[in-house]
Image (spheres, each protein chain N blue to C red):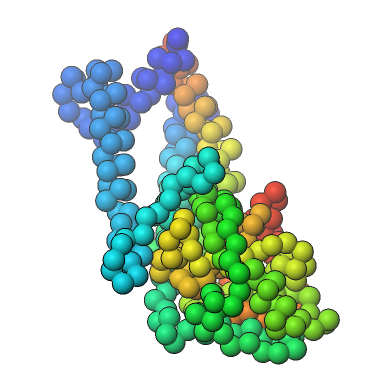
Length: 75
Length: 252
């Protein structure tokens, strides 16, 4: 896997994490909207668990993403 | 410096993806301006969305009660600072029909109208901060009656070890009886010198000190003494901690 492929994979993972952070964040504050439209998957409790769990991976992915851009700029 | 440039460059790429407009938009000043405008717009939208209609009624329409903002040197939050996150929306209780039922493992069942509760039992004031699991908090001057006083009148049977509070909307939560009997826990009927508004739980909200916000039950209609230590309230049965102590997490 070359540098470009890794960068794409990280970017997609970061995008997925960001979308999930937003959905679960809304699942905490607006469960009456998010729970039915997710067919009961994102309840307030589940949203909160995922949201808290995602914080670390999101930061790691974000740092890797920035680092890869930095490397690309220098290279 | 290179890292800062990289972050900035990365941000510019994303801006460009969403707004592939003129090159002038990509200047640092334009981006900073964009962020500031976006922040102000977001704040403005959320301010508009805030329920600003909750105003306690003025008795007799003579003078409008004023919410206090400071108590003995401590800054207080406003009752408008709470997020509305009840399970079925604010409950409008007709106070002339309201009775608080105290039942279960008691010597004498009580069925008390609002005025009798306020006239019979002494009120206490205290400043307590509510911490919500959503991440916000509110420091408020609460005024209310001691739950202990109600229980003393009802006479708790020795077999009781759990107290369960029920609300008008079907919400419920429970505590070990010792939490109520060993601490001066109040059921508030006033908030920052105002009668508790409908949105905040009129006629009574439990001030569950040192517990997460989902233990602060609003619109209380019934108190049951029980020996069922495993009783789970609304959020507890959905995975939240039974103890709900602030110094521990709120997940089981």
